[in-house]
Length: 358
Image 1 (tube, rainbow, N blue to C red):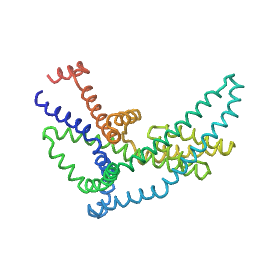
Image 2 (cartoon, rainbow, N blue to C red):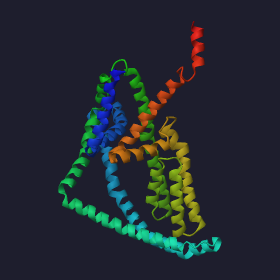
Image 3 (spheres, one colour):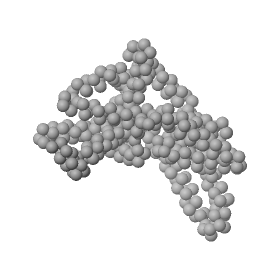
């Protein structure tokens, strides 16, 4: 057993380094995620006859177009809709107080006016605090030039590091494989392949499903003329990381907005149709094509991993959460398989096998 002490020392040292350097590791982990996601596309471009540098440049051209499109079109629209939503919240509370409140009091005998007034005051106070906090943050950024420069430096490092990682991805993987102890190399590579399968199913599959659902929901609600359609659709797509959560959150928010905006059963039916179309596309097209029968992360494991990683390491921990959860899940399955095949789990079966062999 003492020969394994050095593994424990290395693990403890890695954890300590993560805690000590978490503020500067963010661009490197983001770059690793970008390189991991872009490697299949780069390999496909290579198979079409491009050299590795040209293939990597093509991947970054696609990413640049996507980011530019988001900055020029989506972000201004989202900011506008968020501002409109914050302006509409007081009117919604007024409607609840003047229309829904008397109905609730007539049906149940309970008067919610005091709670609604407290809610209004709380929201107003928090908006003021949020505005003050934003002003303080902007002022601090303006006063601390070095902090702003550091932030810009970290962000600008992401594409540079991702480019070089993607350029040498195959060589890096081979170098890591060559460093493995020869007696452990087959098992480690088998487990690494299973981890890659889980990560690919989630990162390259589930994220694409979320994006497609967000586009379907946002486009359908916007074509209906629903206010905040883009915002609701994209939020529903993001919430689809957990099965049915995006559908429930999105359709509930869209029904409320449609009720206030149109006040007709036809508009409510239109919202239901949009989300039903999204669900049908997810079950018949998106899931089979993008995920297939690959095993992804359990929704509970995703939620726990993201929250735990954020609490432990901040934003860097959120980036590490899903890869770490995938590795832990694969290792637990390996331990479970070995336990099920051991004499500790079923001594009688192994005893019978020993007797037959004798």
